[in-house]
Image 1 (tube, rainbow, N blue to C red):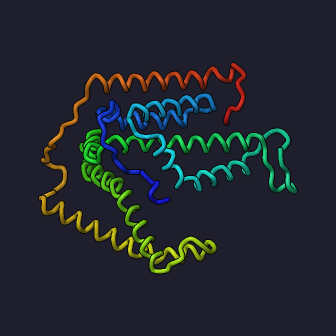
Image 2: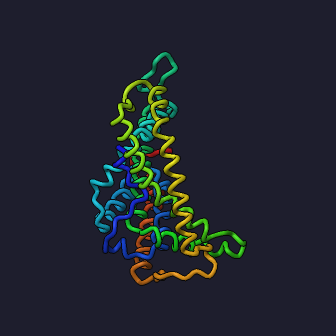
Image 3: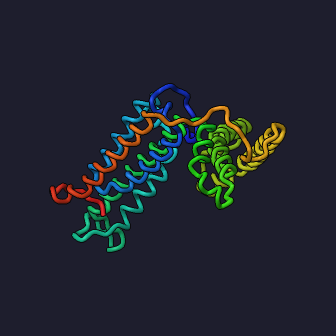
Length: 279
């Protein structure tokens, strides 16, 4: 299952999504998250999901890979569904009533499904940014977008560098964890059976070498940056400059139009009598 986690990975390509300015991609990704939480009904949520699927098709990133990457977060989605199912109270009669303690209402089922779909679309949408943007471009874009904070003496470059390094090391640490677990299993360690406490104790021989490896990699990275005379962002130049073009503004305009359409859906759907509204 660890190999299914693709968060932080970059898949090189020459699609229209890959060629967009990384600053615009960050802005549009933030707008996508806002749209996702603005959608208050299934029709709006499906529209946002179809829009993201279209972007994935344009990017050339396989949808099978995206669906495969959702497997590790299924426990989180399941917990969210259960909490909404049992804690959302409706105005009518419950569908299931066990001793007045456990009650399931139609509103709970509707909200549970809605939240599960929203979380899946959130993970899928946020992953597209790292799938189509290299770590260097992501660092430069974050630094440029946060550059007004330099007037307040905020360490913008260092913050952007730390965020990108942390994001880039996610797949590296996942791969290292998988190697350590395979090595422990080869030595006879039992990591998959037993109760919750037994599994937690079995992870100790995995976590200790993982932490040692992470600190070792961090030290090697710091040494490599120091050997290359890295002294922060002051006076640094860039081999590749960020340039925005007509395609970037067109993409931003399309996102704005879609956002306006979603707002109209939220306003007019209640008057059309379409059910399954989520409070």
